Length: 196
Image 1 (tube, rainbow, N blue to C red):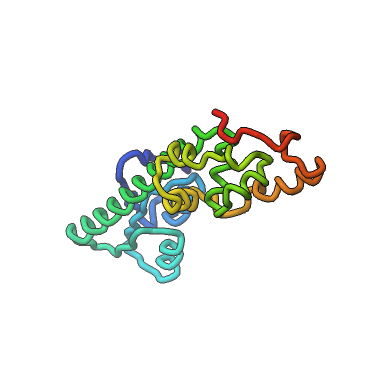
Image 2: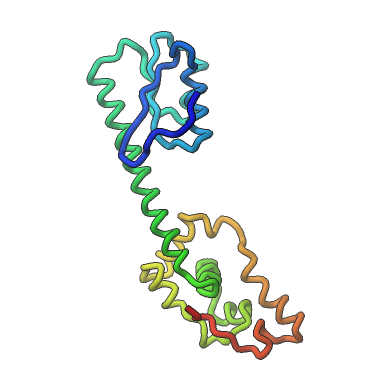
């Protein structure tokens, strides 16, 4: 039925009839969703029924119009769909930028980042990572992430899902230290957390 997704690089939408010869509109909507399409879909039909309308709207249809549709009504629905898709593209671009900045962090900076956004103090970070408190460099992480405040950093982490679940970093320091007789990861209690 559908081998690949339509382009989503510019604000767009899909006009889809519920009944297409040899094709079921709601089934195509489901297939597009399975393939990861975020294009808004506007359904058109000359044979409206409540179950189909409810099913397509619940599955994410932007609108459901009954034929005959006036040009003005169709244009307004398309404009709303374009606006929603433009907003979705803008958000995706911002999230991609945040993810790209996270990728520039060294493994140690990534650990510091995850601990910072969970509200961990420098002392707790040093203990969790097996380093000295003076080696924790929050500012370098914030600079690489292009933020000026902790609130901005936390907001970025929430948007990309880093605060959705525990990474397991914060609790490892105590276990590692206990296994080595109270010392941090390096064995001497000192470890640079700002390696590049």
